[in-house]
Length: 511
Image (cartoon, rainbow, N blue to C red):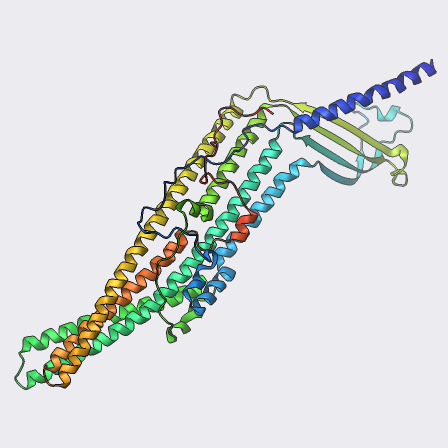
């Protein structure tokens, strides 16, 4: 009989092997499936046939990632480098990336089992009047000290891809944070350049305005002397003084803008505001403005971090649908525990003190009042919102680039016209000086020509500064400052280079 029992146990062990293998194979096959839709890229967005501005240079722009170096100002290069290193918005964006990376790692931890190790010593006294008849069981003491050491392990097998989808969502969210950080870098570089060019422009504007005030002061003084001599009326004196006072009244506003730009640069560099006040005592050559090649219009969408971030958020919301859909299906968990338990500490780790248990558990939510399906519909709605947000980001990027390109091209025309007016005023002033030296005109006429020249110079400086700031806006709209090396590392499919399957799906995959 014992031999028969032994043969039966041996046979059972042999039969268990293929059953275990079958279960393991089935688990692997099921684990290869993932509930919810597979993300296939963003929706196709019509980017048009090209730039709307005529005569736009469409060849690929050069050195776009460090566009500020093309302006030829070492001080600007220093300021931008310092801002990209120390600006607090940039550092905060890097911290957000670290947070999203940690959340991704936490989601990936769902693939692995969890194990808790514990140890305890319990001193207890049992009741003689309780369900266990302590007093009538020989050798069983009422007072006991129990020593425990062991572990508890649990593992939920990812049968229908809930963990996989959660990891996909977290990964896409982390990549969106990386793109947001690139966007912050672009914005900070542009803001530093804008503030610096505003400062230099205000310096030149202040110099031109002071020269104009000086010319008006000379005119007012001459008119006053003629009034004293009886050759001018009081109205002429008042008019000359009014022009002088009006021009002088504009000086404090320019000085305020100048100082505000310097203080703002200090903050942008992550330093006290006064850090760059020394710039007020220095000068720099005027930057050269010229048309720039902007590349194909659709290409800017690959460089714009806001578009790339919107695409990554769409991918995350698509994966969230799978996380919600997985709740419709059964869950398989395996729990195991083991260790040692003994009333005598010296016998705790003997084989007779060993304990062990394993418990497979299948759970299936068969009724929940429709909460899971409602969550799936909510996830699908969030995906649609993300798809619309992506399309909006694409169109907004195109609009920004078109406006910036149009503004800069018109600025170049305005600068050329203002420069021509300034040059003409200079020639006219030279002629007036010659005529005054020959005694053909009075000093008042010469000073009037000088005022025209100073006003033309002031107008040119303001127009040139506005064009330089719009050039910065154009570089920013084109994705200038975009790090191509980072983009290659974090390359994601964009729905702007050609036909792409829509991101929405008619029905979720069941694996």
